[in-house]
Every structure is written in C-alpha cells, then in structure tokens.
Image (cartoon, rainbow, N blue to C red):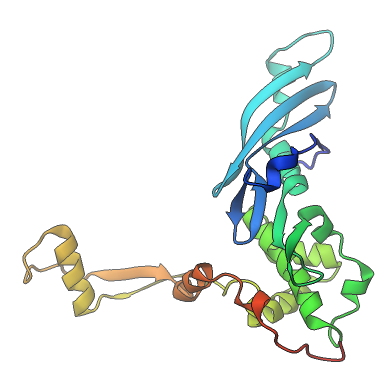
Length: 243
C-alpha cells in the first residue's frame, strides 16, 4: 500500500470526553475526524469514522483537481485506503500513560518515536518502563491491522528477531495478549456432541457422526486476556536489572 502524507484536521476539544471509540484493547480513536490529502494536483477531504472494526472512509469530497475538473482519472489518483491508514496513525491514542504507569493518554505518533532513553533500558535497565513502551507500539499496530512485531522492530530500530524478544518479554509481563497459534481440530467429546444435538434440536441419541471441534491454538488464553486485558499494567512487580 502506498504511503501518503496527510493532514488531520484539529480534533474537537470534547473528543476525549466521550467522542472516542475503542478499536483495540486500550487503543482509542476519535469516532469521526477529517483527513486532507493532495496527490498529483488532486486535493481531497476524507471524513473518517471509527468503531471496533477499525477506521473507514465515510465521505470523500474532492476540493480541487486542476483545469480538467472532476473526472474518473482524478478520482483514481486519490488512494482512499492509504489516506485512511495514514490518518488513523496520526489520530490513534492509548488510554495508558506509558511513562508514569498511571491513567492518562499517549499518542500513537509518540509511541512510534521511541526516545533513546527508552531504548537504553534493554536489557538491564528499567524494564517496566521499556516493556510498557513495547506493548504500546504492539497494541496500536495490531489495532490498525499492521504487523505488530514488525512495528516494534521499526519503532525501536532493531531486527525482527530482537523485536520478537521484546514482544515475548512484554507478553510474559501480561502487557500484551497471549500468542494465537494456527487453526486446530480434534474429535468432539461426548459432552460437546450432546451440546451439538441440543443446539440442532436433535434427539439425545441422534448420530452426529465424526464431529470435530475446530479452534485456534491459544484462543482460550487470548479470550481470557481480553476479559481482563491489562493485568501487567496494574501490578507493582519489581523491575529486573538495575532500573
């Protein structure tokens, strides 16, 4: 997807007071905002709305396209999906202050610009400070549909393997959700077959054949984390190392 430079209109003062929505665990976005973009002489405004499924374009208004006016070619020059993604990165924020560990906010843009002070904490410094920042980058990327480990590697300017170690350390602290594995299947138990018969309105002794249960490895742990998504943020666990 093409990277584009966009300008997000100033957000209304009341966007923190009930006009934001969660697009992921702890990750928030204004439920409605406007992005402006100019590409190859075509200028447009895109009104964006957000919900738990993420941000999407609600209305596209072409402001100026040059002497030829509005036509199909001019409209095709406006990469709507790329604009929405770039604008979302500018508007996203988290409900946790990664620096102090107290309720507060921090923008997605701030998270992506990791200070040297944070980088220097690995591996023997203030690990709660460091890993909360890792978790913030990870959760924001995941909510926006980006590769979260790749986002950590880019933000911290490290290899994918090193970023993976950061992520596992944050996961161990319960700052990010458990890993979800590949799809799995197994033969159903008798109890599960009984539930299937009841759900289908079948007789208790009806033959349901070789019924298999299909799921995702680690799904139970992941769903439990979603029920209580930030246990690691609330603990007073002592830091490892010298921090």
